Amino acid sequence: GAFFDEEQVSEAIFEALSEAAEKSGASPRRVYIGVPGEFVALVNRPVSVTLDRVRRVVDADVDYLVKKGADISEEGYVLIGSSAICYSVDTSEKLFFDVRGMNAGRVSATVSYMLAETSFTSLAESAAKRAGFKEVNFIAAPWAECVAMFEREQRDAAYVLIDVGYLSSSVAVGRGEGLQELKSFSMGGGHVA
Image (cartoon, rainbow, N blue to C red; front, side):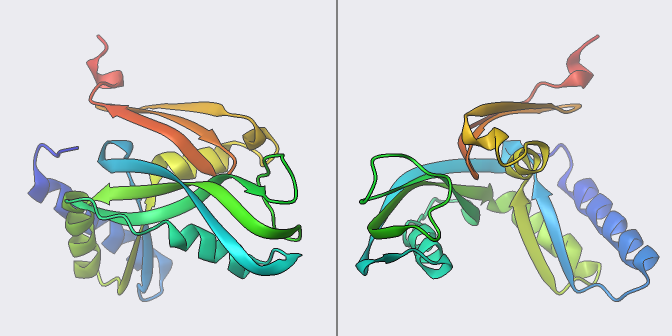
């Protein structure tokens, strides 16, 4: 993705965050900034871990599994999020969307790793810090929309979310807690006469 005028975007982010902090009446500490689809890259990869024995899968096992595949080094990108599309365990041939509490000796998953262009994160982080925020976090906006729009049961099967913006649009295909595909393009409602 690219901005027409980076300085203008930086100033707009600064002003919006400054106003939000002022209206909240609290000193700004932490902010979450949604990264538009045009600035997000998606890497899906299979990851698996062998547990110390066949036992009940706990949160720490799932966290370790997701982190294990996060060694992604893409020039010009930073990892901003990760979430599993689906899991499998060695004690069943089915696919699951959560394996916590199940008995297994090996857990596997297809995990979505969401990356943001550093050109976007640097610009937004700088503006947020100027506005007084100490901690700046980023979230892939298409992923957040999918998780917010669809109930957990609806995400068991693949689904599509299309976000048509003014100048750009994104098409996300999701399943479980992750994204299977994400395509963005510079065409939106502002291009329609």
